[in-house]
Figure 1: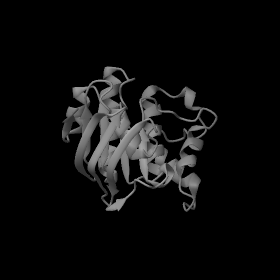
Figure 2 (figure 1 turned 90 degrees about the vertical axis):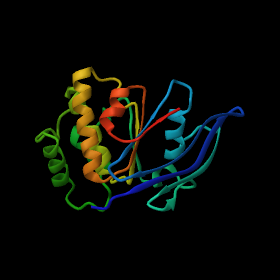
Figure 3 (figure 1 turned 30 degrees about the horizontal axis):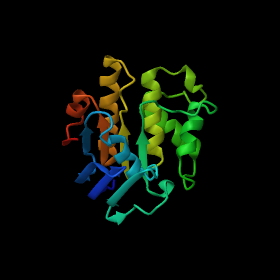
Figure 4 (figure 1 turned 45 degrees about the vertical axis):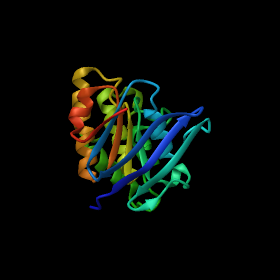
Length: 208
């Protein structure tokens, strides 16, 4: 398994001439860097800049290196950066298996076997034909993470990924997500308002 590395060098983001954030950081594979702070300080803007879809109203500079390669000028779809949001965002017109199939690289030969293997690994064996709407919140979160991992990203951005879950489910999904990222050797940046999320991530915390 290759362990990836994400480097942020002199990242500056401003809005209408006002600096929102300035950041330098290096995140190793399996590590989660947590960025905390009140609304409006640029947390989600940071993720948007790294992923390649920051709105043009913002001014941003600095280098993002993924495994040593500068990715700033690459289109979003070529940056090999995966995203997890507040909602699982499963495609409603596709089955559970269809959602996973969508993420698989074209080079994967036996896609159906890979899908069944992926579902079995998250305790959802036999769920390939299920409608995503029939899944529980925890099951949807598991499928969303598995879809992300199947796309073979080199880094992951987490935008308040647990905020819509109740406290019990939040702990369960949090443990599952962090364990999955660590096992895959992926560096991650998480934006959250919740100190418990930061504690569970176990990595460094940057307060904006």
